[in-house]
Amino acid sequence: MNYSSMKKVLIIRLGKIGDIVTTSFVFEIFKTNFPHIDIYLLTLNLNRDVLEFNPTLKKIYYSKNNLVLLWNLLKLKFLKFDLMLDFNDNESVTSSLIFRFLKARFKAGYNFKRYENTINIKVNSLKKEESHIIERMRDFLIQIGIPVEESKVKPFFYIGPSIRSEIEKNIDHKGKLIAVNLSAGAKIRYWSKDKWVELLNRILKEYPSFKLLLLSTPADKVLRQAIYSELSRVQCPDADQLSIQYFAAYIQISNILITPDTSAVHIASAFGVPLIALYPNYTDNFISWQPYKTPHRSIKSSGESINQISVAEVLMNFKSLVKELNL
Image (cartoon, rainbow, N blue to C red; front, side, top):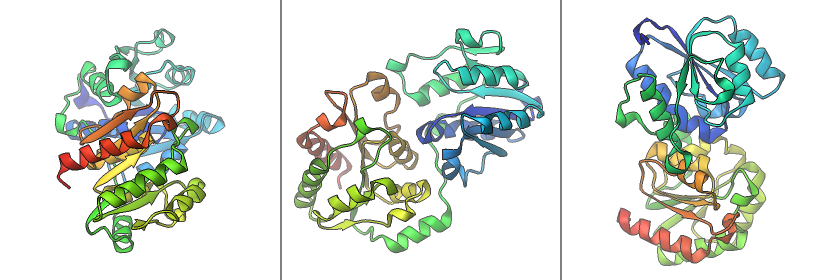
């Protein structure tokens, strides 16, 4: 393909926050290699805050998997794209319909049987049980002839400058600040309140100079306040402010993050923040959604739920990471 002659590229990423944060390096690589190309993105509504300050995209179409998606497809159908890319590495009926409906000179997607008559550039995926999601997308770009600058193969996240300034005024982050994210996208990723209280009190006892920054979604405000009430040296920002932009800014100012949620994992990776990540016992998930290019400890549960991970195991890994970082 002759990328120098292209003007418009459409990227499809109908995934959650973690999907869009891990895909963000693709936008950076395209703009570095081909600054003349306008990048359009089709993604989900829930990614609005994630992408609010991203400077690499010409236009973003936000959808749900319903009539809004159909309406966006109708608008996109009349744009003349040179290239369309879908990074979903699970065979998808929705992706197949999008490939059939939209027009582009070149359509690139993974080599699934469902797409065989609708795409003209077929990409072979690395094995999920052996590769990180970012490595699979990096390989996708290489297969379609995009030069890849390794320093840009990492998550990116753009925070509004006023938000960063605001939290720096409101949060005392002198000394060592440990961000603790309590929320997750599935029940099996929640650790019990009692375990959080035990772990965090032991950290505070063993590291007198450390402070804790408790984070959660507004939906988990009660859980966060219950844990907060049993700890000392804790900072607890207003849950009403915890949009993904504020959430990311709190992580950025921290020395270490502890989290059971992979969206937070990738945000930390974007800022190079070291972290402790808790995972259920699913090999594909554990390999694909690891922290990337930042010091970390990943702990996989022996069972379906992360609640089977012990306090002692998390504390041991935390102490090991602190020692590595010389905090």
